[in-house]
Length: 188
Image (cartoon, rainbow, N blue to C red):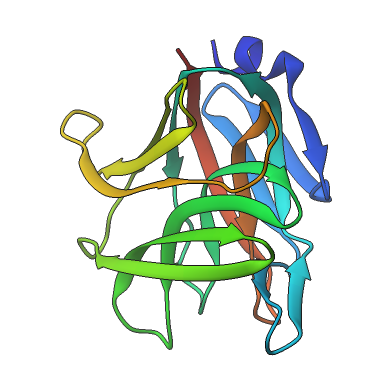
């Protein structure tokens, strides 16, 4: 089922280490990869690994990851992208060896913001969900059991594009690679 869903997907910054199996898709993020922008400080990182399919109109995307061993700022999650200046992501992220958080970032006009919510330590699997309405309003939520979803954020991208690239991403801003297993991905 997973492999059938991924048939129409393509890469933006393809990961060098990708392994398909019955368990899922094991992806390793290269060191120094990230998605983050701050035009005021001149920070522009757009080299994370993004595996996506184009979608128009209203849709729901649900993904499940089995995260790897936490590394500082390493992330695996869900992403939507209109262009390099208008995109969003939701992921797991730890910072300075501390608590694991669910992190959401919305980037409009080349400026990223971030919001964090604590997540249960030792989360074996995490589900992320994007609901995009016909009106362009997006809602991001997450779940630790795949049943009960916790809404994290509602927003609208300022880009005037009808089609959104939607899928999964993985990145490792540190000097070490980060590996996680994509267990499922479903558009409805």
